[in-house]
Image 1 (spheres, rainbow, N blue to C red):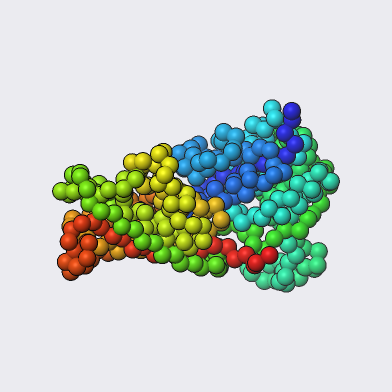
Image 2: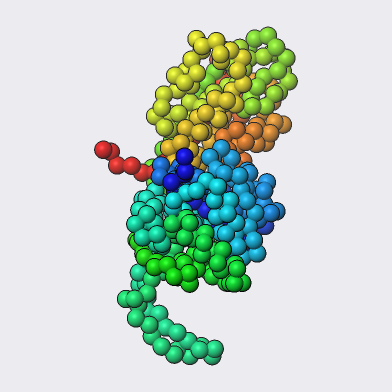
Length: 393
């Protein structure tokens, strides 16, 4: 059965004006590659059946890492121009025979579900449609010396965005015709469609659907994304395990030699257990025992990194991010200091947060209580998470 709507995501440019060592589509915004945000918005839209990415031949590994777990067609390599890259994506889609195709720039990561829906509807209705914004500022033309030559009527001007929507067969034909006559200079598909004789209509774009080009664009984009995560929450976690037989303890996912082990249903990682409860507490989603009950034999001797990874994924599933994790370990031995950075790094790896957002301290209880008597270990944890603000229904 033919796929009804497909999308081509153009991600083959070098885009180094934004700074850094990576093309801009692979730079991260608050921990997520720009390309992943763009592609995921299309791949997860209910109206789109296929997503075809077009990448640079040197970026296969970057693309694979950025698009992991997303339902996409295998990427194809682009050409020397944007036009050639779009044509490569369309040719790859031809065997699937879609009716409508959206063409989107990977460097626009903030397209909304509503914008994609409007694009699909406009593409179906007109066969060639682009999202636009009205021009708010006065626009003038100037000569080579910078002198004003004319003032344009801004009421007739529009700023064009992507995704642009077309009948698939008509757009592919236009691209092939342009190639046949040596035209490879169109800056967007709407311009090519106009050249091919198609009537291009417009639909409402979105101010947040910006194209990231410079380093300043990234600074503003990160600020805007953070502002959207305005529901800031903190959670507290506590865990304790007694010492038992063994020659090591697991703390924060790191194996540390010790004269005793820690007793517990899983690997008794007191640090990770406290962190899991802190994150789940911030989400108001119960505690570790709710999701991984000790009565369930499948969790016997389980590695606790699975529990922390689950809790971190719960944050991401709600559109949020972990802002900070902080743990205090209480014990007389073993000494935590020599392992501090290894534990922080491992926690950051499991939870997918930078090490600078993981705090770790250790203290004794001055020989008082069960920890002071060397009977076990305890851990206290705090988690700060940011979620999108949603008004109560």
